[in-house]
Length: 235
Image (cartoon, rainbow, N blue to C red; front, side, top):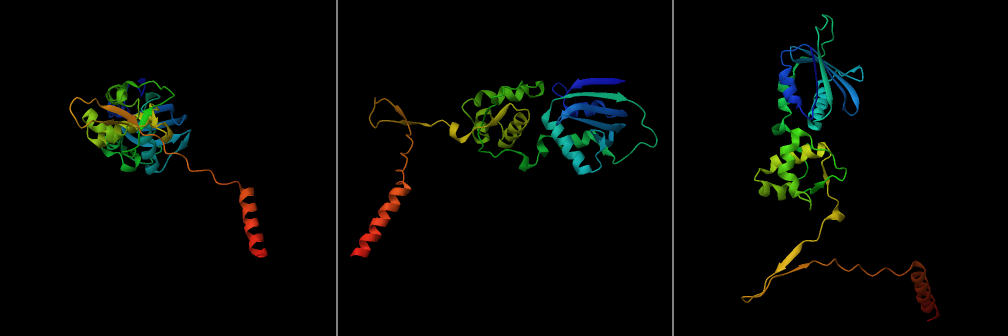
């Protein structure tokens, strides 16, 4: 049995469920940092991982790689069912399905999420929207053109702030959005209403503060100090 596909169309967690009783090798040829990744599975449990042919022995690093692979959500894969040799390396015995569910949205560590007030805009690279993120992009994408943060988006889309942060994290992982540069933030319009009835509202923009006067040239300041010094001596 051979199984082919792309994580854009088949989420890694769903793929693990399909393979939960299978024994064989799951290959990702360039999905993780452009490197070859191999997962040796025995009845759906992860027994060994190889990165560019070298074994990854530390379970903590295995978790980091799988977490990043799942967050990226794109890249071709193939699975070949085969009986693992009796003496095949068994570095660990990790339930792949449970492991990926643990990395699900509810379990993303806080330090991996963007700051609630960080403003995002659509990425200038114009990356293609993966089908697995189409619904999320349709929900928040229209609000990002002028730049928006999770604080702004949560009441607009009717979702809890943490869920919005997770969505922004996933969109950023596939280069659909990028943090807005401070200099690109538009001036906010301020509406001024009149006191009496019938007075039309007007809008005005905050004008940038005038820059401070430029300091006197260094040579001029030195000459001024010299004149004051010589004057004090002659006096």
